[in-house]
Image (cartoon, rainbow, N blue to C red; front, side, top):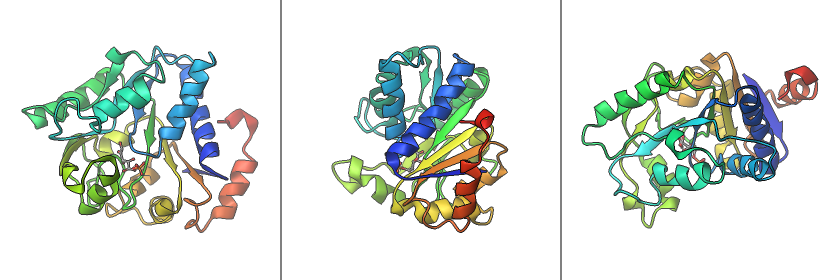
Amino acid sequence: MEVIVLPGPDDVARVAGDVVAEVVRRRPDAVLGVATGSSPVGVYAELARRVTAGDLDLSGVTAFALDEYVGLPDGHPESYAAVVARDVTGPLRLDPARVHVPDGRAADLEAAAEAYERAIAGAGGIDVQLLGIGANGHVGFNEPTSSFGSRTRIKTLTARTRADNARFFASPEEVPLHCLTQGLGTILEARRLLLVAQGEAKADAVAAAVEGPLTSMCPGSALQLHPRATVVVDEAAAAGLTLLGHYREVYAAKPAWQRP
Ligand code: F6R
C-alpha cells in the first residue's frame, strides 16, 4: 500500500482532499464512501473550502456512509445519518437524494443490511472509500475478529470503541451497543481505499494495519489485500512505523504523473 507521512493534520486533510478531488475531476458522478468520526473531519472541511471557492463541484456525486448506530432515536444528533447530513452533505453541497446511510432504525436490520449492499452495487460500486481507523484497528465498525469476507451486517461494538466514542454522547451508557456496518469484504470492493489517521493514539493501529501480519485481530490489516490503498498519516500517527524513512523517500520521489 502507499503510505504518505505528512507533518500535521492540515497536510493530511489537503493531500486526502487532493485524492478525492482528482477522482471527482475524472468522474463527476463518482461514488464516494464516507467515514464519520473525527479522522475525516479535516478532509471534509478541505473539500468544502474548495467547493465554496468554486474549485470543485460535488453535486453529481453519490455517497455511501460506512456505518450507522442501531437503536438511536430518529433525528439523534449523533446518529451517522445526522452527522453525514451536517458534516458532509451540507458543506460539500452533495445532492441529499444521493447520500445513503445504513438504516439503523429498520425493524428488519438484516434486510436493511442486504438492501444497503444492493444499493452500493446498484450505484456501480464505490470509487473511493474514505476510512478512519479505531485505536483497536477497526475499520468501519468491523471490530477485531471480523471476517475479511464480511458484508454489511449487524455488529456489536467493543467496550473500547464505545468508550472512545463516548465523547460524542452525553454519557457513556448512551453509546449504542450495536451498529450496521459495511463489511471488510464490502470495503475491499471499493476501487480505491483512502485511510487517514492523525495523532499518537492511532500510532499502534496504523503500524499494525500497515506493517503487521494480515489478521482479523487488526481489521485494518485487510487493506494489505487491496491493490490500491493509500494511507495518509501525520507524524504522530506514523510514529510506530518501522519503514518510515522508506515511505518518505517513495513519496518524495513520486513521479508527478502519479499524483495525487
Ligand atoms: C466511522 C468509522 C470508524 C472510525 C474510527 C475512528 O464511520 O467507521 O471506523 O473511522 O472509529 O474514529 P475517529 O476518527 O473518531 O477516531
